[in-house]
Image 1 (cartoon, rainbow, N blue to C red):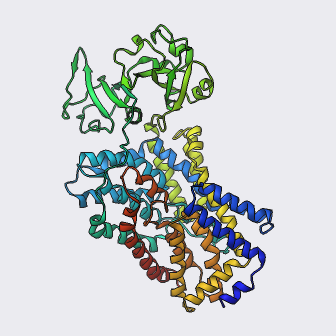
Image 2: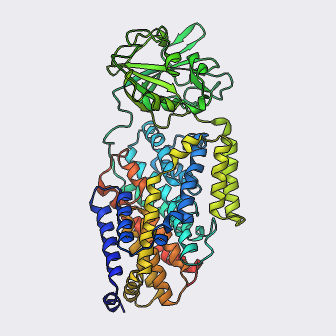
Image 3: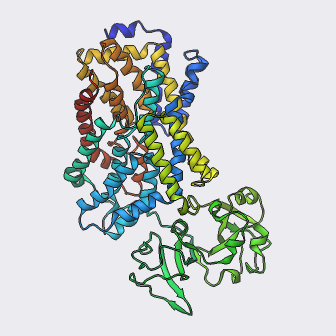
Length: 597
């Protein structure tokens, strides 16, 4: 067994092993995008005849892969209605110690990540945690790694929390002939792992967290604007203080003054109570100004926004640089009839990096001025080739939140979870229905739904499933499985530990779903040769592929917090390697107890 198996392999199997080795080296050592590496490998296997058409395209029809893409839309619906922002602002509070801060941060992130893909959860929390750390006078490096780790730990607790679980579940159905897992079937193994991780970070991990400064502050920007916002009479912010409303210590933004009736409050105290119809003048950078649009009942003070044709929920912020051939150059915004000409409203003007004050309509535009506009996204397509502007770019995530749809989004999410948990419908059907309802009920626009899908992630998953199929059909997976079985001494516990170890090593240098797709056929072949149940191995692959803590490149959320936390590469290893070992031991111990061999 072992060496003999490899000597008997066909040329197709050896080519597949060479391609897998190339994928490993390409993702670990080169700067090529993972989707390029994996798709290139799939093309090699297809062109050489190792895979036929059906097997090469098998991954693109995998239920797990399609479910992952559908859940991006569900997450976008919840995010666009303000549900995630409400959780973060209401729950974090003002703890008086590092331990309490970690508890306040990690507990809700784990909970939310169990039911939403953890990548958008971390993306939403990064600016909030950066602001929160400044309020607590704490280095963001003390909080960013726990943010990523909490999202990973929460993601493994349910079937829908991370793409890996869905991919492995799809392979269980398609390749192993199993009925698949329900929503909380994996929870009995992964929840103890998450609790162990929670305790480790609170007791030991926090002492290993470094004190770093971010390499680049998220709010450093050369373009600074002044924007006037008005408080609607129905706004929930009315009657709250500046502190309570969350308008103090905004990153890269400050409240310069409040115009109330006939007087101006120049030095705004944190205990100043907001009133309906207050006009708030903010000064800051564009990304932070975009965040103002997410506060319920706070809108631009200019009445021009009500004269635009598309609904405000369908608009976004756009930056445009005035050219010297622009008809509006050297004319005031009002005299140039900017809104009528371009179907866009000027919210603010920056000149040579500085704010241009005064009433918007009275500002005389000069070539080189940077305009902050509110317009429909189609403005970009219509004006990108226009000679009126040198440069046009969209401000990311600048669409106003659809607060009125928040209860609908919450009900849709709860219905999806309940339907999948009871087994009445498959996870794929539940996710598809939820995604359609999110768009149909206006929780997110169709354009936002399209942009929310991370196509490069789906391409990696689909290609990796095809490569995994090649490992299985050529016999390479069986040979590797036999080798692992020999190393484990024919012991199922040892084989389980070896499978988890192989998965966790691969996931630190390539995407987690890809690592799972490559190890799955190896573990399936080994378990069949040993004559034991495959279920504990499937669960171990799910957890091992997601539990990537030792490097910033092993999991997308680690890479997302790398810059904002100001980390060095070794910071993750110092905190994450012990956590990897804890996950390894806990999973190998518990998985066979829940799913016996």
